[in-house]
Length: 194
Image 1 (tube, rainbow, N blue to C red):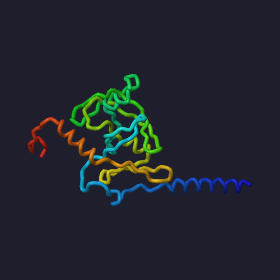
Image 2: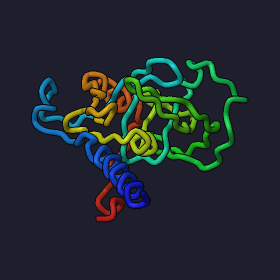
Image 3: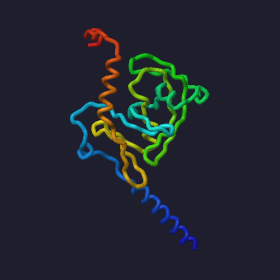
Image 4: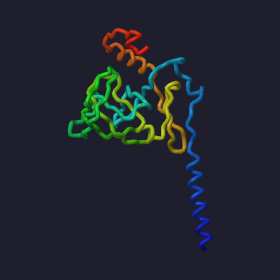
């Protein structure tokens, strides 16, 4: 009887392991480029459901370690200072300025039927984007991104699901960001460290 029970437990573990191994493979191919402008160097900009609202102009940045929410989105969600928790570490804005965050807030990001809660750092700085989604969201969702294919892929319900980037939006907001940059003289080779 003990042997039968042990065999049943082993079979159960193998069954669970096999199910875990059956998760879909995440990857990109040339088919994922169909419908995109190629070649390009556009940022990956998407629309995501944040805090129950569809938010456009969300920058996907797998290189960032924190999710950032800009003040326009914070106000648009009708959040209040008492909704924030303290966050003291300074950040550097797109314009190269050091800024002190207003605080931190935990909000859900919904992708299809999947919901992941992340901590957003709220900042009062100019950005053409409403938010930046970073590694914590990727890791929690099990997602991977490709700026070349402008997509995010993630496993859900045994299938691969996608969030498709908007190249036109990415280009529009990059132009907006560049037009706001102050006119800066180019560095000489000596100043550039060459």
